[in-house]
Image 1 (cartoon, rainbow, N blue to C red):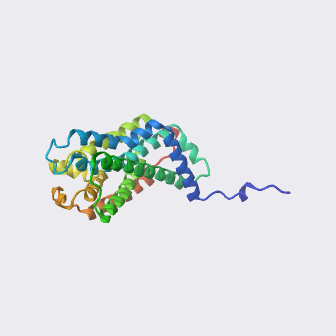
Image 2: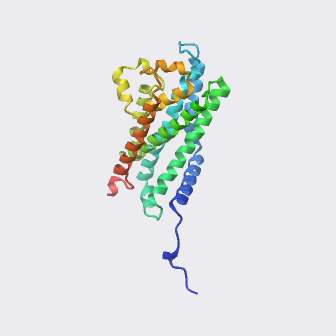
Image 3: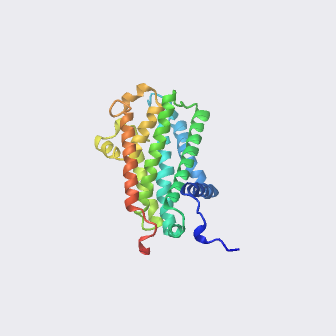
Length: 274
């Protein structure tokens, strides 16, 4: 009886490999309990502090929990996508993990599909925790109508996709895993204070607002405010409206730009490997 030739063995399809890769990514992530705690808990922890300390301290027109919830929701999505992928992929590259994966029969698309599944697992988990803390601990206001929930979902999907692609692209800028943390964290931290997460957009200087509008976080926060805030609060936006068509356009454009940047810049090896 003749043996089976290697050439006759059918390899699993890209989708199947990608799903398996995603399950592996999720299992690897949840094993590191420190990463799980800080990734999921940071926006909720900030919300607890702000809702406890600032409630009634300023004239916000609403409870502090309701005021800060949309911005922290957007911040959390950028954290689990841009920050997680930017630093994580740079570390894998620096340690040689990407080079070894590239030498296997695994389709490159399956690798990115696995990362996508990880990011959306984190995004949904963090959203559930944040909304649960807001509603159960502080009686926070949830989206009121089906249209508001739909806005929340499409902003989550578009924003997370855009930030994920940017995180993958930024990972190629870092020469080492240590440098990746600075390259990712510094702009993310700056954007939090210029995109309406902690500081209302109406008090930001026009120049600062113009620069922030070039990045996804400002549009994600604005879309989330449209989902959570009463309609009358739109008057406090820079344009006096939610401008959801501009939110969709800006986030969609960043998805395209991010994809182009990934295709042009992504590297499986470090620069020292050639």
